[in-house]
Length: 401
Ligand code: ACO
Image 1 (cartoon, protein in one colour):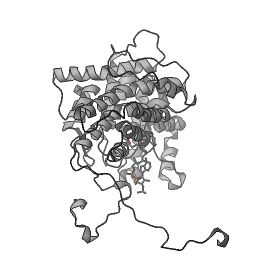
Image 2 (image 1 turned 120 degrees about the vertical axis):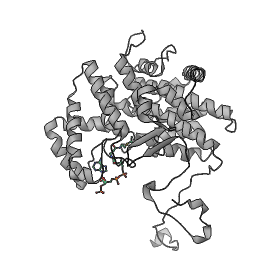
Image 3 (image 1 turned 90 degrees about the vertical axis):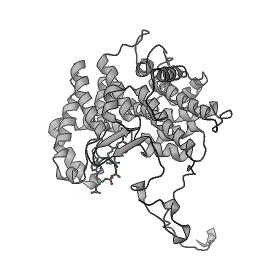
Image 4 (image 1 turned 30 degrees about the vertical axis):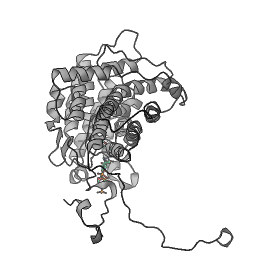
């Protein structure tokens, strides 16, 4: 492991690492992954323990602050998050400008960017308390904005946050077509929502978090840094995979069609990949996928939902794990292989799946942004390139070309 910054410039040492497969862009004390062993720790705590014993908001506090909160610290944090859930009324006009059929991720990107217009001039990034409040505001407001984006996309009036509900239930109440009474979530649905949010909360230097840090490294407004993270998350190779998985499973349709899907995924000419399979860092079973798979059975069983897509997913996993192509390349289901089946069972629309991921990942994005702002080694992210263009040549006038 070489710290390239310490290699004297005169050596001319220069690395080419397309896709940053072996390049650390920062030091971080937030999340640890051992991809070969299938281990994931948030601030040192195994993901399995947090999934079983913690809650999303407690995990958000842990990621941001480095330690689990005491009762008093948690109450203060929850109070702060709860009391920053409202959007400025002017937001409704921004929302109204989007096409009626805009994808909620497109709207979320734009709406979060526009937050910078409300919190910019007075924002002093040198002040740790203002930085902390920025993080709280984002964790608090992203669900409100996300739900409003969805409701706009289907032509429903937006619903204001009910601050007597807890975080995930409050979000679902704003999202769903429920009568005026608070939404009652069954215990298994509440547990599943919390689990998915915990598992999606952070994952070290993934594409979206690295994007937040890259934008943050320039000293840009933190709201646009997070908006950039949302944009990076949307791609099907990253967070957009959860929506793509469900569409893929629906296209496969029946367990009998799994073999041809596997064959197509192995054929490089087809341009088709098994969505929800493979990971840059995990070369073993993604520990999050194991937890989501178990929860999928619990949710469907307890809600009495029978979803044929689960049979297709299980058959697909079984076939892939026995296939030499997937075994050799160490391709296993990732966190998003089963998550969509749970969201579907909870009545979350498929176009909201990546938005759900964004809500949870906001906790990680703001934690990384905070860590970066405090890092004395933080410098502007500025990758180099290997130039492959023309050598020096003379300009030719348009009449002589
Ligand atoms: N289906 C079929 N083949 C695959 C898949 C897949 N899902 N994933 C990787 N491969 C193959 C590649 O074709 C390549 O084969 P080769 O060595 O013969 O050329 C090999 O496995 C290595 O793949 P890379 O693309 O080099 O791996 P990389 O680390 O760059 O990509 C990624 C990781 C993007 C996750 C990839 O596995 C993929 O596209 N998966 C499907 C999309 C997905 O599920 N994304 C979510 C990731 S998790 C997250 O962001 C929450």
